[in-house]
Each structure stands twice: as C-alpha cells, then as structure tokens.
Amino acid sequence: MTKTYDVPLLVLTVATGAIDGVSYLALDRVFTGNMTGNVLFIGFGLAGVSGLPVLNNLVALLAFMLGAVLAARLTRGASEPARLPRSGLAILVAGTALTLALAGLWLGTGAPGEVAMLVTTGLLALVLGAQAAAVKHIGIRDLSTVVVTMTIVNLSTDSRVAGGVGAAWLRRFAAIVAMGLGALVAAILTLRADGSWALLLAGVVMAAGTAMVAAVRRREMAGAGAGTDIDRAAGPGA
Image 1 (cartoon, rainbow, N blue to C red):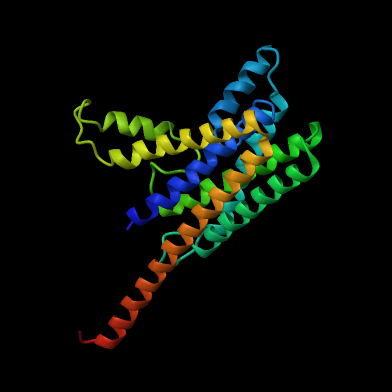
Image 2 (cartoon, rainbow, N blue to C red):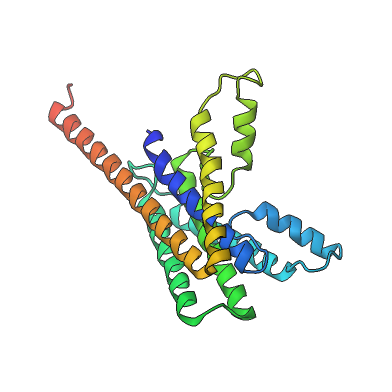
C-alpha cells in the first residue's frame, strides 16, 4: 500500500530541498526544513561565532515545532480507510497555498526586509513542520519529506556492503537525490535570478506533490468503499 505514496512524497521532498535552498541563500543562512542545521547554528552563535543569525534560526526552529504540533492536533484520532486523513491532506493544501502566496508577495514587493525576512522564515518553517507531521500518518519512515539523515543511515546499514539485504534501497536513494535536486535547482535560480522565483518553483512542485497525494488517497478511499460494498453484498453468512 505504501508504495503508491512513494512518488508523491519524493516530489514533496524535492519541494522541501528547494525551500531550504531559498531560505539558506536568500533568508540569511537559515533552514526551514532541516532543523538539525538550525540547532547547530544556534549552538555556534551562542558560543560567539560571528555572522550567524541566531534569531532567524531560533524562529525557524520554534515555528517548525509549532507547525508539527498543530498538524498533530488536527490529525490525531482520525480514523479513515486512507492512510492520510482528510485533515492531513487539508494541511498539505494549506501549506502549498501559503508557500505560493509568499512567493507571489515576494515577487510583487521585492526582497524582504529584516522583519519580513523573519516572518517569511517562520511561515515557511511552520509549513514544513506541519507537512512532516501530516505525512507521518502514511508510515514511510524513509520519506519524511523534510530530512534525509536517517534515510542515509538506513540505506547504509541495510546495504549489502554492511551485511544487509539492501531493503528499499531505491526509495532511500531517490529521497536523497530528491532533496539534493530541489536544493540544486533552487540555488541556481536564487543565485542567477532571485529567491522569489525559486520559492515560486518550490510552491509549484509542492502543489504537484500534494495533488498526487490526493489522487492516491482518493484511490484508497474508493478501494475501501468497494470492499465494503462487496462485504455487504456477501451478507453475514459469507
């Protein structure tokens, strides 16, 4: 069942890589999806390393956590045939809409100032935190869409070189490539054009991934409904 979600979640991973590329290169060296980097930057900054935007990293960290908390509250206790509850899909749709709105605002008003940069950072981190919590219901540990550290660990430790059987190696390798590809394209757009165009592209990719998730979920719901109809037709003595 989970294999049908692989490609949609890989597309969302590309979008996250792109957003992190934008946030790091155009929002003053901060990650909005990769919280490990922010934790390290906060530690470096508190130790006295100059030039690190500790406030920006702290805002991203707290906003990401807030997004995850809100998504968990909205999806907790959901009981539906589909792996992703309706509220989880709504979170992905809302996150996509907000990302596209931020890109459009950036395009229309120009590079954000200091306060606008903090707000943009916080909102993007909120989106990705909520996204990570929402897709957690699908149950694919190697496709969190926001980080690939454990995916790399799983790929390495389960490899034949390490004495494993190479389980799910294609999915894991694809997740790593997807994150890097998103960052690569965003970096090229940000450096050669503007961060707003890279964020717009990330929003479009996120929209595509969300649409694909919705399509898979629709098929799951339809399959569950067909199974229920068959059970009813068979009757209690079947």
